[in-house]
Length: 545
Image (cartoon, rainbow, N blue to C red; front, side):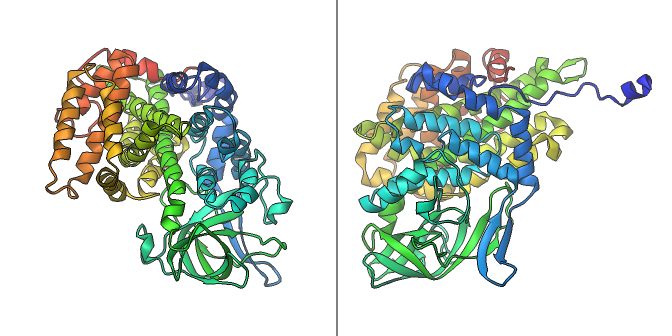
């Protein structure tokens, strides 16, 4: 029996990556936290990182995607209920995300680094499972938009910021915590929200309207309150739509169906029909886009954080695998070409992490003109670049595991399917690249903020200096500017990443980035580095238990 057991025991397989601390074992993250906040932040987030690295968390992430949400439109007696049932693992993940303060808690905190802390926690906890980050992100992003009306903000913000996960369809006054969603796009318009056709008709009660129309893509339809856009006599207007009205009756929100999506299956993304749905106006009529823009800015930051988290998770799995798997006479990590590939992935991940944390730190300094201007230009830059880079990076990480990476059990196929999401949500690549042009054309202070930021690394690497000069020259050529918006956005974003790495990362990381991303025929294929001690770069990125 012993020999039979040994024969059936697999050998030369990398152990599962569990038991590590997702926060403290990520050197690029901990250094960014110390740089923009304090070393105490790492200690504060260590319990979250430890839980995120457990086998239990990994299993809940798997189960939440294995067992899809189920929509029930009518109950057994024929009453319209429009409820979505989630697997218990979804609730396990959500309870901890809310409990760790990853939703709207920073807006009610007096910590000077509250948004940085939350961003790092969101980045780390998203590596358990990406889908539940959507309602967490929307709840975080709703608060700055709600501030357009002090009375509405006072009603909802304390619940959205509470660290109590309280699911269920009940009135706001009966809940210990709440979650927010958003519904902007419609069938005929997509990102062109000014083409929306949902009508808003005033009621006899001041500030309240009935909505008549639809929303094409509303995630997490079981959330407690939604920010939506509708057409009034004054134009596109923002509205607050409660799931349950103050008297305890359900608002008329018909969930038509749940979307059959490419990526995660844990989160329910839905189509809604609104017919007589009661909604409270948020801000002035005709100012809906302006009102909701702060929510868009916050969710764009989370798109960057979510993509950076996917990069880091994929890198962690790849570097862990090659450190434990042998082939052709030795460990994969000792093979020069594999070192090149994993080092290149590590550089890409660190650049994304560094930029994401820099932007999160800017949110903590709303009164600083430079930080506000930098946030305005760097958010669409990072949203375009980091999210656009993620699919190729995750695909290369998957390949490091060979056939094992192509199997669902590894977790990499889910990451790969998820990897295009953040480049589409909150404005596709084109929308964000054009937003960069819009900001440059209308707000001259944003270009100066970019120049100041990249200028802090001037003289640190000649390749970065030349890339900055080339980008400024490109800005000076207005011919064909719209057609070249992606090229400009990519160069500006890469220069921001390069400046952070040159200033703060180890020399071998900065050298590898500048040597491959600037002035070369890089082409985006990973594993073509020509500089430095690549083993040091790989070791820096590999998780430790």
